[in-house]
Every structure is written in structure tokens, then in C-alpha cells.
Image (cartoon, rainbow, N blue to C red; front, top):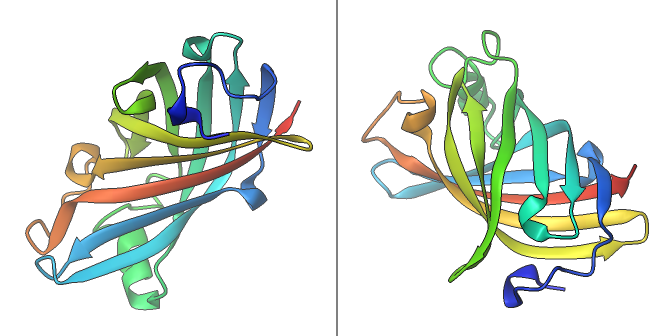
Length: 175
């Protein structure tokens, strides 16, 4: 069931779910070289939890990400991004998102929360694209546009776009 097509709760059983890192993907796309090239890649998820409430507005998500897992298919770029110039994974070994609000509006279901990257916590809004029950839990897809400079990742301004498009495919198992 696509959850942004209705204001009713998707057909996912209310309850607690544990995010499965092996079945969860965080993909990103960002423009560089003054908008001429799109760089795509992934960041690994290390864990998290989802609470699906009978009232969707009371639902919540917490997810942990590993900045050292940044992968774009270019080893030199990946080393630079995980290093001190950008994510500084050695100094900031964890990234995370914690929801603060779930709401239905003109653009469908959204989840607002706080994203911590590079030691900086700032708000991010995810647009929930799909939510569905699976045999052992649930799955969701969400998208967001993240302003990397609002999260302390400001190197190469002008050369690399501020906005990073993120797509998250989450698989979670019932607890």
C-alpha cells in the first residue's frame, strides 16, 4: 500500500519493529563540478527502531548510520569524504536520525526529525513514499533533501551542491 495516497493508516500492524541493516539502503545523489556531474552512492545503516502506532501521528523512527561506510564507487573520493574534509568519520563515528513528528498534509505523509551528521544536529523532513507489511514486519521508502552545510559539512561550497537528495529503503522486523 502506498501510504501517501490516503489519510488512513497503512495496513501495517501497530507495534515495535527493529530495522534490519542488511535489508536497509540509504542512497544519495549530489551535484558536483558546478552541477555538471551527479555523484551517487550509499551510506550504511547500523540499526534502529520503528514504532507504528494505531494513530500514525504517534509513530516514530530512530536510525543509526555509519559515516565510514560512505561509498560512491570512487575510492579516492570515498576516502576524502569520510576523512577530515567532509564527514570526518574518525572524529564523528555515528550519524543518526530521530523523528519528532509524523503528519499527513498536502504532499502526503511526512516525518520530521533531527539528523545528526558531523556532530551537528539539524532538522530534516522525510517524505514517506511507501509503507507496506512484509511477512515478518514492514518496509518503508522515504525521500529527503538534506542541506549538507546545515549539518557542518561545508567544504567545497560552490563546487559541490549544498543539497543532497536521499532515498531510504527500510526493512524492519517485528520485535
